[in-house]
Length: 256
Length: 251
Image: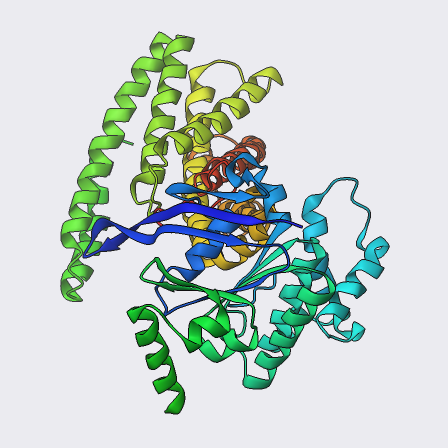
């Protein structure tokens, strides 16, 4: 069980504007603690640095200043591959890279490579993973290009589970899904958290979704942490003006 | 053939300019520049080779090949859209492909250090390697940019940058080698290669021209494979940090 801690984390990025290179501050001095077994929601408007936040946690990008600790160890001192196995990341748009579902799910073991036995020897593990995401075993032989987006996203989660992560990062995994598929994924997340004691960090811009996932949340606006706490408390009694404005905007959108 | 023949052959250029003018495609200037450059460059290289052949010094031959390699590296990367300057890696790849292949030809005693073998063969090798290197640079760039999502998804699952670009790597090497592979498949059927045509025009028997041409094709596949793979390995590394992250610039 791993504890994640961020101390003074900032991230600067170079962007091109009017043909000139410019540096912008995407994340600004973030302190945060995520305890083992939490479902932690990162919520805020788009462009607020939510995705970058996740990318820093499994080192697809590195912090510009500050540090991230996994169980007290600075993640920059850990082997990056081992870190990514412990801290899995599922993206907004599901990506398949092998021809069938079974091979996709097997991928984390394939790249691990050490005394790799053929996929046939790992049938049980693969079936277990597809089971977790509530897909039938018959999906394993399906061509991954022929799945619906919702099914692909489930396969992506199953694939991430194959690496046996202790923390799972999910970057708006339901944004491309219909309401039913969205609710199914949310139920799946709650189940995984309960049954596998998986720590989950979930990025969304949807307040209703954050409430359904309960636990804790951090409100991220313009790269700054403006509020943090139990999701219900934060939303019923927002302390920060920006949180209030974000909540109002979100509610207005829902009324329309 | 004499200077008269060259002047007479300008009639052919005249036809091209005439058509360009008539059809208003406005290529007369380019044709004219090309015509002059062809003349000046070839005459200059002719005299230069004459000197090198007469001196017949190995270091001079190697130096000539080196200059060709550097010009090849420069040409291969001149139009490159990559965010990094690929000149040194391209020149290195072309150089390795060229010197290795020429060295092997010498070791196998297929050729001697006579400049009449070394220079034209190395020239052909550099020309083909230069194209392969340019194609590899262009392809790896579009592969990484278009497959960014797949590559990052693989990295996030614990793949190394090498594993994450496995498919892009294959596609790139293949794309760089396809012109050479196609040439090997159709050689002699669709067109007669330049070296062989030249030998026949200069009076060699078709059989001895063909013998040389076969060796030329085999040496090209060797050098092009080396250059294509080396360029791809070195270029694909530019897109990643040591911590298996895509670099931020330019992607």
